[in-house]
Length: 90
Image (cartoon, rainbow, N blue to C red; front, top):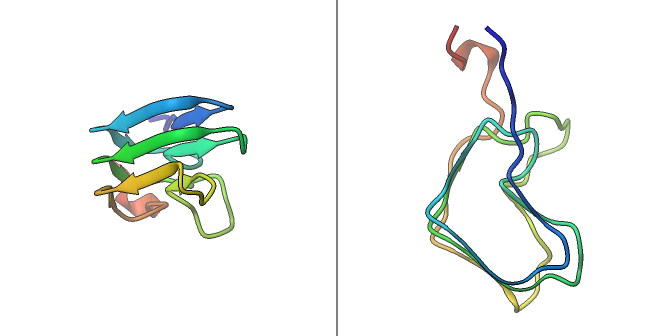
């Protein structure tokens, strides 16, 4: 069986975005990643994230977004990062 890791949502200079009610799992990186300081008025709420950050040696980050007042994170459930190989279905 081949494991295909996916990517989450990548934001690049976006404004007025709502990311809500998603299940993010089996990702190489973060569930939501903002690649620009120009991102404004982003609301990330009510998502479930598990098995993320497969492609990093560092501590994975579920939501890789700048810390600023116009980006809000609320009521997201974050499960374990990088699942051990034995935890994958065969």
